[in-house]
Amino acid sequence: MLRVLAVDDEVPALEELAYLLRQDPRIEHVLTASGGMNALQDMVQMIGAGERLDGVFLDIRMPGLDGLDMARLIGGFPNPPRLVFVTAHEDCAVQAFELEAVDYLLKPVRPDRLAEAVRRLECAAHTPDRPEIDDVIPVELGGKTRFVPQQAVRFAKAKGDYVRLHTVDGDYLVRMSLAALERRWASSGFIRVHRSTLVSVRHVSELHFDGGRVTLRVGAETLPVSRRHTRRVRERLVRQFQDRPASQGALG
Image (cartoon, rainbow, N blue to C red; front, side, top):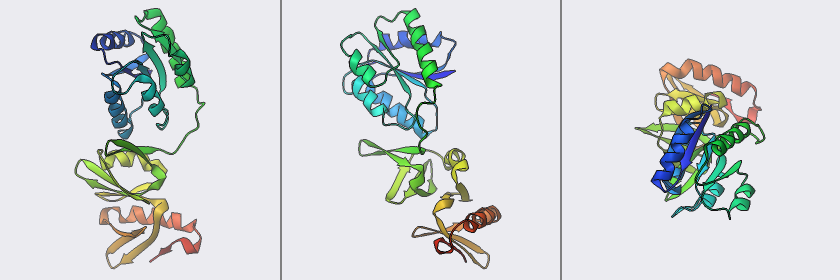
């Protein structure tokens, strides 16, 4: 079942396209966005929340951010969704397929052609022809979107409804819960050490015991480990340190 986003700056056209897509039994969920900028913001939020998006049905001639420019931006996303262009203009087909679109539909959209586009999208979405890459978190910085790779994150700290990612080259605030990030990265070497702190095991250089107090050294930071998490953290890090050269870390 496919999860798709329909994008068009003309509301009647957007509503018609969304209606037709929802009639297709291969479509699980249809999201809509009125224009390229709104669509881009929605996609950044979806990536941040770990939501899946299989395809984008994209108009071309839109004010602000047109469909071709948006497609180029989408191409830089981690595991980008497949593209189907839906337009009233025939003159952009070559550019569309250079951007690896799976289909190019002309308005008004015929149900049989849309069904064929969904078939092509379904085939493309389940074809593993793109290499897996490191998970990333999108961060908004002064009107720009920066993608912070998982491997660069040393630790993350909860800040209300936000999480601050501490990386090798700076700190970034993202709107998501620490619990959601923990679920997303649990199988990638991240472990909860405190109610408000998630740590990348690969970046831990030292583990210290001082009376009843346990701390971790992560980069230049010393992070406390709560009593609740001490046993699990110690067992996990002891296994990690056993596989490292002595010069890389020490148990204190």
